[in-house]
Structures are given as structure tokens and as C-alpha cells.
Image 1 (tube, one colour):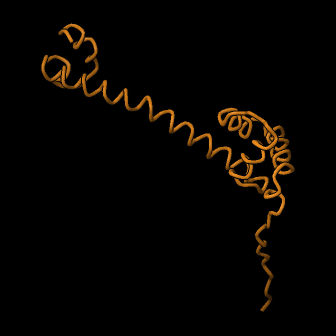
Image 2 (cartoon, helix red, strand yellow):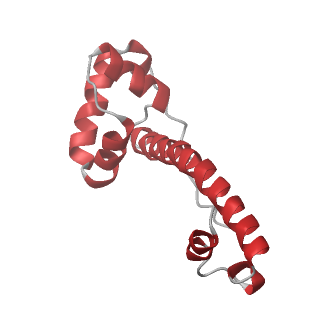
Image 3 (cartoon, one colour):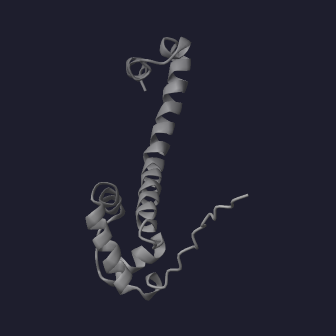
Amino acid sequence: MNKKKVFNLAKGFRGRAKNCNRIARERVEKALQYSYRDRRSKKRDMRSLWIQRINAGTRLHSVNYGNFMHGLMKENIQLNRKVLSELSMHEPLSFKALVDISRNAFPGNKNVVHPPRKVSIPVSV
């Protein structure tokens, strides 16, 4: 890389990393490596976030994520995880309809055992 391009990319860096050619070149190369790596990790992080949101939405209806996705696959509903996470957050009634469809398609979703509720009994002394 020529000097002009390196200094252009090094704008905003601190100390000599913005105005000393050798240090700026090293810092810019490292920054480009980080940006290359993080463009890929951002995709993984977003997918993980979508799965967490879908799981939270399905557990409100007493179905876990894996069974929900399996039921959607059996019903041939081809919505991606991004759309499903948006539905779970912003359209709870539409998402509940999808959960019901998934529950009917996959028998593992029907036999859900709810944990017993703790009932406090007042004790008078």
C-alpha cells in the first residue's frame, strides 16, 4: 500500500499510528484483518441472537426451539430465523399461530408437562 492510502485508512487512530508511516501501516493491516474476521463473526452472532429470540418466544407457549423448528420443517413452512425472530418480538399473535401449527405437526410438542406451581399456604400463629 502506498503512503497516502495508508494515512487515509489510519484517520482516527491514536498516537503515532495515524502519522508515522511504518506504525500506521502495521495498525492499518491489523485493522483490516480484524474487519475481515468480524464480518464473518457478525453473521454467526446474529444467527445466535435470532435463535435465542425464537427460543424465548416459543417457551412462552411451552414449546422448545428444536421441536418448534422441526414442526415447521414437517409442515414445509420456510421462514428463516431472522423473520421468525422478528415475528416473535413484534407479532406475538402471528407467532402463536406458527407455534400452534408446529405443535400439531410434531407430536413431541403436544406432551408438554408444565412444572407445578408453588402455592403458598398462609400459616396463622
